[in-house]
Image (cartoon, rainbow, N blue to C red; front, side, top):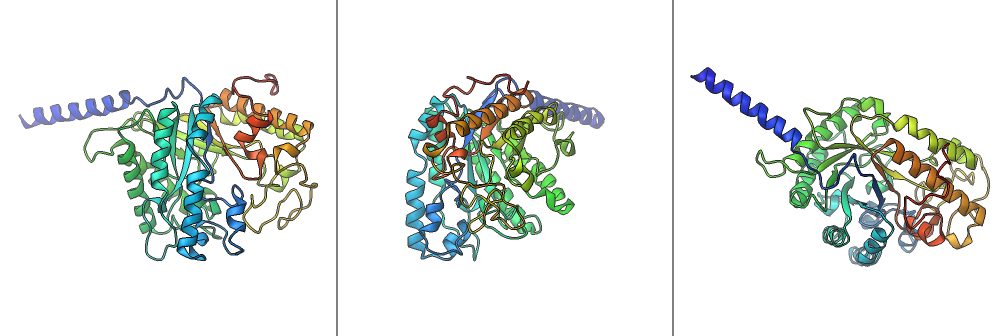
Length: 421
């Protein structure tokens, strides 16, 4: 009797696992319809290059990220600047414009401090109601939201866009940091498990610094596994959600991740890769045609991956000329003002307002936009450009591209359909 019961139980368990694998239904037909989207960068996580005025207006050169923004200012001063920014940088009218531009997804970066702040951490809270508004606006306009945890306790990469700029990240080396991050993913998953048609994707961590070696990568792999469980089982029972886990490649080649979190043991997993050509001396030295060729060559490196694959960040910016792009107080490789770089040329006319861009530069921006979109749609399940809006770096702005004509109002309308041959 007992053996029969055991057999029955194991059969039921196997059936329920199989059922889980085959009954996963995301809120968007990933794999059959292309993701075309944009990031809402610099809104709920400050970035100096996206809104330089917020940092310049402090009059304090030590304020280089959101951590120091709270640390080196009077709390009420900092809070009022942040609240004004949250209220004005992105509003429902942006969602209207994004939908009107033929896009179907927005990726919204948010920091862990929106959910909880630990002792001695100078972050200022208040972002969460804006995330909730954004989800409502997305629903109003038929857009899908990817909630992206962009900064983790201790920083996962040391970048200013993790909230806390530092020479070496400390997220991975402190179990308390990791435990706190897991709890936040549980919180996000339980908040949105019931809305997979508006929030079909959670990205549990942006750009962990896998290039720092196996100590980071082993933690990241475990964290992706734990996050999958937290996202798939948000109810504290065996009931599953239909939310996709979007993991990042941690700056490793896609081949490193082959076979990771694949069926039949996992379902509803997508991989995010970020592609930029400007964060190296060699990238800044490329000719326009070399930039286009590099974009076209991604078709072979991205093709045939074993999970849904998104290019979750990329840009039409092909220099690092934008003010503070490499960090507040840090210069540019293109202009030769970055440590260890040799000047390629003047940044004049390559960044700032699109109204100052030459017609030949705008033609190149259209070509590099199309070369990337065509390549990413040929080889992956879609793309999200970084970023929707900037104060003074229009070469990076989707909104400015629409305004000045290097991005088409319909993203499938190509002037250079054969740019990649």
